[in-house]
Image 1 (cartoon, rainbow, N blue to C red):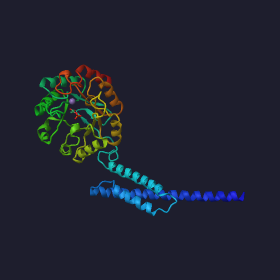
Image 2 (cartoon, rainbow, N blue to C red):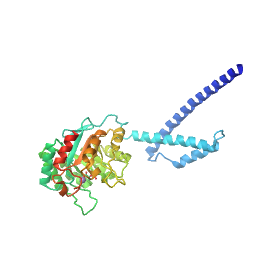
Image 3 (tube, rainbow, N blue to C red):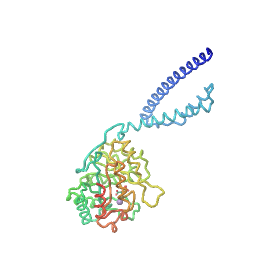
Image 4 (cartoon, helix red, strand yellow):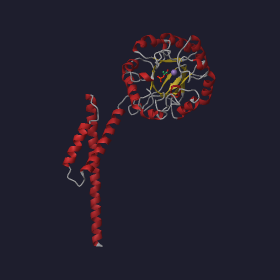
Length: 356
Ligand code: PEP
Ligand code: MN
């Protein structure tokens, strides 16, 4: 009996030592993490990347050399590899948290209105209009129809970034003037894409929102110039961009001074051929989680076809998008660009009815 009691006491003593060692290891790990975060800030100031594989393997080598057991070299290697990996993740998330676009930097939603359409609040705003502005008559017919359906912002391409240089390139400044005239006659705000810094000055008076197209998401000099203007911006996700890259592009805009930015998911390129792009629906909740900026979904360029736009619009709303972009044309089949995906007035009215 006495011996069992002695063993029990020994066990309790050893367990108490283990508990104490656990606490000491925990304290050391957190101290190490805090130092690593300092290293990460110094590196950021020096413009060096956080991850340094050469330094990591040198540390592992010297730890294995120092090791006297009972852990094997392999076990020591795995334990420290895990510590290094977890620390790197911490460094990366702290870098992300210090970005101006991050929700950690600004916990509350960025919220603003354009012509009564709210972004980042509780409403679901719809931006609609033709892929390209083609004529006075077309712009007027679409604007009148959008106003009838309760839309507050009209889109229309004037500087068209077309895949083929032989495709219709848009009417340029003339198109912008037509769009702005028609939209303003019907009390609609105007959004159109600009593709080149040389367009900014002449286009400025005709636009209420400037769109940066998917193809220009990586055009950092354009981002800097547009970010320095005092207009709301729609930033579209490139079809091969990660969400992190999209946020870095938005960071360029914010760094240049912009605050009213709408991020737009517009489909990414996958192996699927039944759609033009694959709508990345998970982008919406992920972006809402990571950033305070409003998120829009462009269902038209995602699908590239008319017949599935209504369910995609409903899905976008259900998943938490702040806004929707959809292409509408008075005669979609004869449109000079994107004729497969634009809705006619009846289908658009139905979509609006079912959605709102
Ligand atoms: C557009 O909205 O007119 C357009 C060209 O879209 P994206 O830049 O997403 O291809
Ligand atoms: Mn289009």
